[in-house]
Image (cartoon, rainbow over all chains, first blue to last red; front, side, top):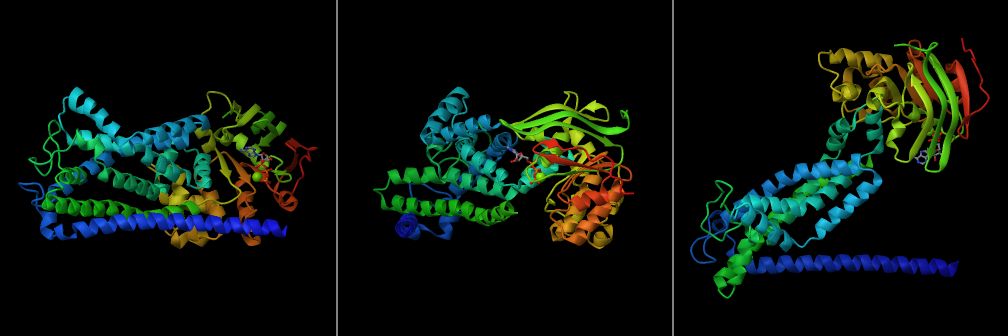
Length: 288
Length: 238
Ligand SMILES: Nc1ncnc2c1ncn2[C@@H]1O[C@H](COP(=O)(O)OP(=O)(O)OP(=O)(O)O)[C@@H](O)[C@H]1O
Ligand SMILES: [Mg+2]
C-alpha cells in the first residue's frame, strides 16, 4: 500500500510539473512574440500612424484605413456567422438525437481542420470568378464567417449545454415548445457564453490573411469603406503586414510592418479582453 | 370535457423501459376529479418516472420506451393527435427541487403565460396576485414582486414554482416530493397550499413521508420495483 501511495504521489507530482512546464513554455512563447513585435514596431507607432491613411511608397503614412477595413470585414463576418452558428448550435443541443449530434460535431471539427488557404482558393473560384464579384469585402466577410463558424458553433453549443437541466425541464413542464424554450431559456441563459464564443471567433477572423488574400483586399487605391459589393475590396491589417513584409529589405517598410503588427495584435487582444469578464459570468451561470 | 366515470385521468397497463431496463410495469390508476392521491415508495422505485410519463415529459428522454394507455379527460395522451406541449400546460408539474429563473418574482410567476403568448389582453397584476394567493405566498412577497426570485428561501421558492404552474390554470397537478427539500414550516405551508388546490382539482402527490400521505391524501398507493403494491383504497382523512 505504501509503495502504491508513493507511486501515486510521484505520478501526481510529475503531472503537475508537466502542466507547469507546458504553461511556462506557452507563456514564454507568447511573451517572446509580444516582445519582438513591440521591440521592432514601437518606433513606428504614433498617433499619426493610427489616424492617417497609408500613402505613396510602402511604409509611408499610417494604417487608419487598414484598421477600418479589418473592423468592417470582421463586423460583417459576425453578422453572417451569428444566425448560422445559432441555428446549428440550437439543432445540436435541442433537436438532434445523440447520433446526429455526434455526426454534426465530427463535421464541424472537419470543417475546422480545413486549412485557411483552401477557403481563399474556394472563395476565389466562387466569388471572384463564378459570381464575378471581382475583389469584394463581402466575399472576405463570408469566407471569414465560414472559417470561424465551426469554432463559434461548438462554443455556442457548449454554452447552451452548460444551462442547468432544471431550467429546461421546468420550461418544458410548463408546456413551452422547443422553439419557445430556445427563445425563453436557452438563448437568454447562455448569452454571456454566446458573446464570449463570438468574440473569440472574431479575434481569430481579424488576424486571418489567407482567406482574404485573393478575394477581398487591396494594397491601396481604395476608399476607407466600400461603396458597393462588386469590385469593392477593402484594406486590411493582416494583408498590409503581409505585403509590407515582402518589402522588408526597405527599413521603412519593415518598421511599418511591425507597427501594423502591434495594431493588429492590440485589436485581437481587445476582442479577447472583452470576452474575459463574460467568461467569468458564463462560469457563474453554469454553476447555478 | 367528457370525463369518463368521473375520472380525470385513467392509466391502463402503463410500462416504461429505459434501454433494456424496465422501470414501470402494468400500472393501473384512476384519478378522481378532485382530491389528493399519494404515491409512496422507496428511492428508485419509479415514482418520478411515473409522473413524467403522465404529462409526456418522458418523451424528452431519448431512450425511454412507453407502453400502455393514459387517458386524460377521456383522450389518449399518447395518441398522434395529442399535442404534448398543450398537454403539459394542462397537466401541471412541480418538481422535487424548486427551480426559479434568474428573474424577478413577478417574471417567474408569469413565465409560462408570457412565453406562450397567453398574456395578451390579461391583467398581469391580477394573474400574479391570484397565483401567489393560491400558492400561499402572496403575504410574504407582496411588497417585493420585482426583486430577484433567487433571494427567496427554498420553501418560498417551491411555492413560487407552484404559483408559476398554477398561473397556467392546470386541470391536474403532478407534485414530485414537493416538500422534501423544505424545512418543517415551509413544508407545512406547501401542504396547506396543496390541500386548498385539491378542493377544486386533482393532485397526484409523490412523497416519501407516510405521515404526509396520511395527512393529505384520500388514497395512498405504494410503488415498489415499478409496480403498485396492494391498493390501500380510500383512506379517508376527513
Ligand atoms: N433517463 C434515465 N435513463 C436511465 N434510467 C433512468 C432514467 N431516469 C430514471 N432512471 C432509472 O429509473 C428508476 C426509477 O427512477 P425514478 O427517478 O423514477 O425513481 P424515484 O422513485 O423517483 O426515486 P427517488 O425517490 O429517489 O426520487 C431508477 O432506477 C433510475 O435509475
Ligand atoms: Mg424521484
